[in-house]
Length: 139
Image 1 (cartoon, rainbow, N blue to C red):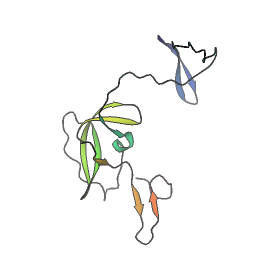
Image 2: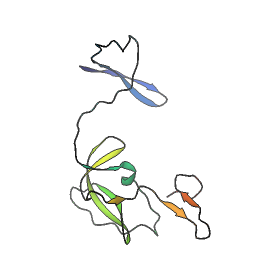
Image 3: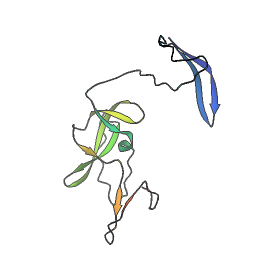
């Protein structure tokens, strides 16, 4: 049994909905008044190709960005595949997402590597700077 209350609760600019969920408490581990964070699984698929959502949002500087392929029907995402010759922009069709990973229905093969970020290495130094370290230009 699941009941979602219609009255939103706004805290720190986040909208919450009080939800009542029936669970098996035969071991008496849950006590009255306890709160919890719950993930409700609405659909699940096994043996799929999935990538981190950051790969679908990767932004590259103009001089590194490969040409984008033409729009294709049903292909609703764009990723950069790492190949022996560099980066290749490729359209993909996405499926289910859990907010962290997204299923890829077509456009990628198992084992292919996709770019999720960019690291810069100076030729005069062995120091590697990541886009996420905060000490470089953001792309």
